[in-house]
Structures are given as structure tokens and as C-alpha cells.
Picture 1 (tube, one colour):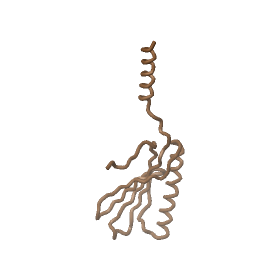
Picture 2: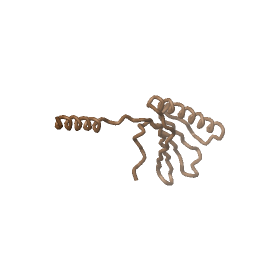
Picture 3: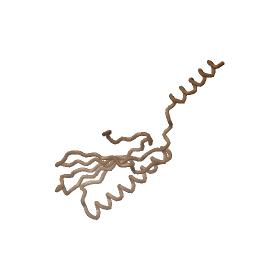
Picture 4: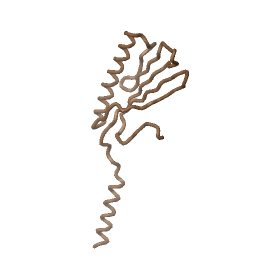
Length: 124
């Protein structure tokens, strides 16, 4: 009987260990890429927010994309720093700058919903 209990316990523990953990939250990440003639291309990652599930993250991504696009369009009209503001709805915004004195000619923002257990930043 002890062997049966021991085997059942081991089987149970094996099942728990081999079951992938469900992501508790989804994180909306923003990847910012800058093309600069002087220093080359740089990229950084920022956390925008955390969401309880994937669908909420997608909704947040849509809202952030709409707000940021409107902000860039407003800047384009008021200050005219951009040649163009473009992108793919809810995933990507691209801008090209008119003033190249600092060497920056392109600025790109990519939006990603990733499980809370994933961190896209480069490992150091």
C-alpha cells in the first residue's frame, strides 16, 4: 500500500510540475526605435500598463495607439516637426522628422501585448 501511495504522489507531483503556468496578467509593452545618423539605431522598451487578460491588453493597446497617434497629429499641425506620421492601427506608429540637426530622422513605436512572465528587454 505504501508503494501505491508513493507512486500516486509522485505521479501527482509530476503532473503539477509539467503543467505550464497560466499567465496571471498581460503587459502592454512599447518598443521605441530611433534612427539617428550620428549614433545609429537605438531601441528601448517601456511598460505601458498591466492587464488582467489578453483581451483587456488589446483594448488598452488600441486606446494608447489612438491617443499617441492623435498627439503626433496635433504636434504635426501645431509645430510641424514631422514630415509624416504613419503606422499600422493599434500596432505601430512611425514618424519622420523634418529637423535633422540632432541627427534623428525616424522615430518608431511598436506596441506588444505579452504575458506577464515575458520580458522582451535585452538581458544584461
